[in-house]
Image (cartoon, rainbow, N blue to C red; front, side):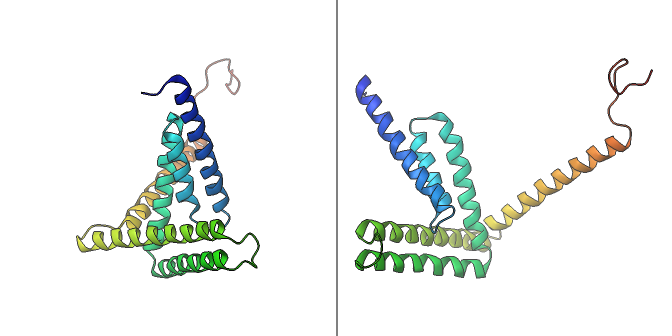
Length: 183
């Protein structure tokens, strides 16, 4: 479909774009914005060319969905998230229209508005999924997440207890002549 040089140019363009979006997402993990969603988008772009990015995309997408579901499962978090998203849209409008602010302009304001809209859209989808689950008598995504985390914690705790019992029982058998064996 593509010639060799066109394929190389496409790979370079996808790599540059994917790394740039991934970098913005990583920055948003500590700055205001939908960090995990943008990280997932960066890995999605990279997955168009790289197999390793596909599994990373799935991990980031799952983490973003889990965080949104947790927020949707708690009314106070939902309200805070919606207010935060609306605040980002308002701040973006202000940044786009007020020339007196540092780095003001349509690109800066637009990116802040976009981030706020992503936060709001993610929250609306999570609330809708929780509503649908409750309406059909099924566990909400947040409840499923809590169950999974509880099962993982129980499994981890059980493994630690099992390891502790083995150590108290004398540990593993050692071969004759190996360190720790008795003559």
